[in-house]
Image (tube, rainbow, N blue to C red; front, side, top):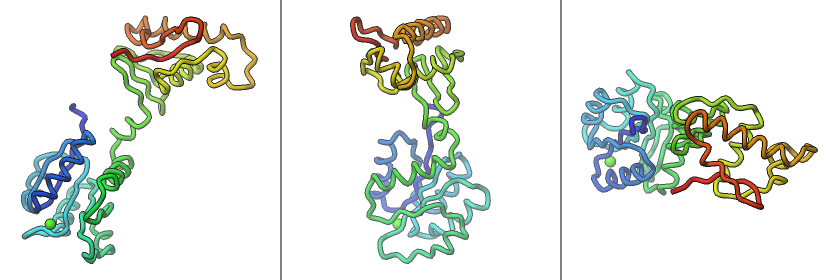
Length: 231
Ligand code: CA
């Protein structure tokens, strides 16, 4: 994946480094490892990273010094790894531009949560991906209410969009026309049940015109509709 998030892991203990890489790769991140401060700076100058995980206690150049040098040329988010009981000078850290701290031993969940929170603030790629539903040949971007089918933008009316987004969000679940009217149009809408059929038909026509996506809208005879992703 060309748009994969790349993280630089700086840690001298091999076991800890392996563990960090394992957690990060499992989350879908690309990992580059460095065993000391010099190696980290060398890698940082050659490649672009979305985030740096930086151990404080490193042989030679320590984590603070590495952080300081990185900050001279980059605003990349930096999370410092500190050992329990290790005195952290938060004022120094703040002045150096440290974004967050994780204390060892840490839970993988906490580490990933902190990384995600930080990336969400700093990485436009992530922010964009957060409200996006992606299926083969069909992308629904909720923040911008943009729908792309087969790579082409599909112009939908607000209700067509709402209906598609609602069904896609609950993929696999069948909804009756009544339920769809209630959920998509609202309880106070006194519309005909055929309104739903008309909107489904228009959605299918538009997606067909784009060349892809209509196959996701499945009619369940005698019941209603669902959004289905066939394996
Ligand atoms: Ca260390």
